[in-house]
Length: 142
Image (cartoon, rainbow, N blue to C red):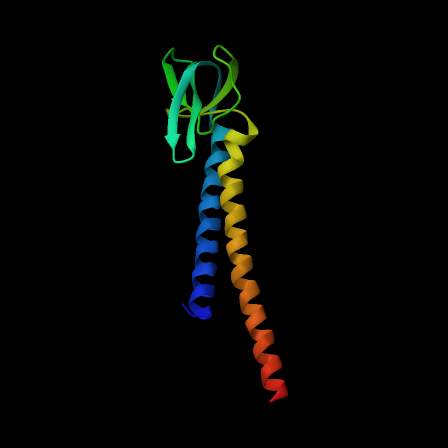
């Protein structure tokens, strides 16, 4: 693969990841501003396996103002105990879209995509600048 192709892929990947993080950011901001909040409780754990082992993800139950009991599994394996009280934030129009109202649950995905996007852009831009300096130095000497 040529440097030009690698730079193009790196720049496009970086832009795509940043676009994805922007989408996640605005969805989370909307959830925070328009979503409902409810007390929840850790009712159990869901074991998920991967190549590196398995983790227990907390299952949270909460009740909407209409009296509907909802249950969801967190996106991260947090340090929770069965019976522990947590605050839940959820989409009022779709209570199935719920998260524990803590920083890491709301922002980790956005931060991770942003970091990888910036890294890819940095590699692409750095490579472009390096190639320009290298070509300029080569043409000035010859």
